[in-house]
Image 1 (cartoon, rainbow, N blue to C red):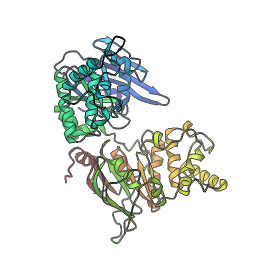
Image 2: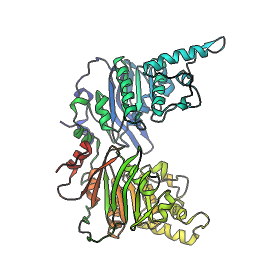
Image 3: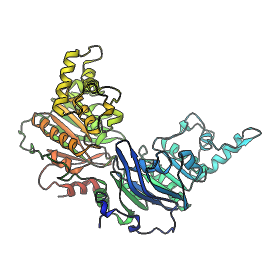
Image 4: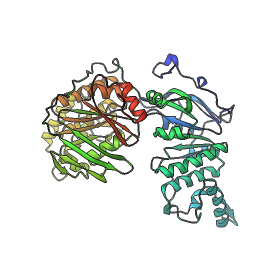
Length: 528
């Protein structure tokens, strides 16, 4: 029986999962809750980690993976729950304190000093000393021991920056093992590695597991999870969904458990739009991507975008949805393929060039790449229009005021105060302001990356209805969402992404439903 976190009366328990061979967990987290202002990031989550296992932590953006790791290592304070390490109740005051107790974390971005030697990085904070100074010979000798454990035969006296990213990742793990770590947390360690480098890392992980180290592994690559992990814990919307043995959890079921659907009750008055499959045969694409790709980000793909259509993009976190959108917008530079606008080849090297061609983009990272919290609502709305005009041609104050007032009213921004600081508005109203920013530029193509994430149901319904209205008015839209029901509700065509590649493009028809999309996401194959 599936244990869905949206039904609190059936709260999942790790006791329902098969027991590993080890009797006692090295880490036991019980009833963990973490709250931020207005947000419950973790809600009564249980998690356990046993010696000598590789345990994958899975979930989409906002599921709570990073928050759970930070709760364990003392970065985030708990609002509820308890943590035991080796049977002792513990709360760390930060990563350094956690490391002292045998819990080390290696992050996606290697947090080492590339200007120092390999040995200096490995022994950083644990340098051997002699006669009041550093014992360089002993440092290199000790570093060599840890390097050999990683299967690395490199000069400990060489500069870290002279080595590949994969080697740097292994050096970071070597440093973690200097303190005789019993728990190793690997947070997206493979995101920048090629296939051979991933296998090298997996060899090391398996050896550490054999040595009794407990490894918490975070990755968005399904094939990698199944290649190396023993168990999987799935989080969704800050809640525990299930803990399962990897060998007993089919990929399709894992995808289904990770993706949060949106029920008819949740979307309120949002209405599924009529598809535009009756487009005229002689219609010309507004934009054509031909063999467009970027190494390490998106495999070459073809895509036609037409006026008045909504193209939905489905796929898990890390599937390449955002990377594809950024190529269409010029935020990232393609290293192969072409873009044609109105039938003419066009180079989009920067977002400003895209704006000049009436292409707008709202990032999934609303806080980091969208909201300018210390500016007013009005200043945030005119930001995109002013960028398109250039900073040497300031928008007249009267015209700016008219635009701001019109969009506050049209989108129902609350409070309807153009002078309010954007950081003081709710997430839904911040999202409306960001939409207003780009709508003010009168785009022909609007790319929306997770526009409904983290907002209340009412705001979500309003934004979904707005997408439909804009398409009816002739705008072309790309709509990216992890919620498959939203994608199906709004889209004329659906692009499915998996492992940085476009694996399917489907018209929205009655036989295209959530189970079919999940099957494609899980297998990478389109089945009839």
